Image (cartoon, rainbow, N blue to C red):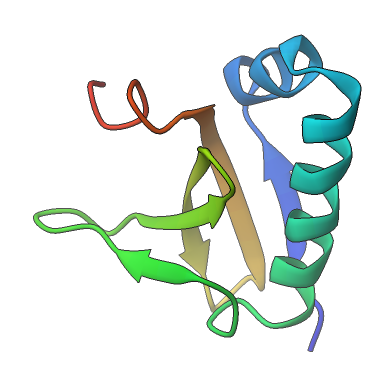
Amino acid sequence: MIYELRLKKSAEKELLDLDRITRQRVVGALENLAQSPGAADTKKLKGSDAFRLRVGQYRVLYTIDHKESTIEIYSIAHRKDAYRR
C-alpha cells in the first residue's frame, strides 16, 4: 500500500532550502518511505508518536496515520539541528 505524503509548510521550506543534490536524495528517500513506511532507516522517537528517517547528514521527522494511509512530514533538518525543536 502506498501512503500519501503531506509536507507541512515549514518542512516544504526546509526542503527547498537544501542544495540540489541533497534535495534529490531526500525526495528519493521520501518516495521510498511512501512505498514502505517501516522499511528504510527509520526509528521511533522516544516520548513521541513521531519517527525519524536518516538521509545522510539530514533527518526527516514525521508521523504516520495508518487509518488514513498518510505520512505527515513536519521537519527536514541537518542532524545537529533536527532534534532541538
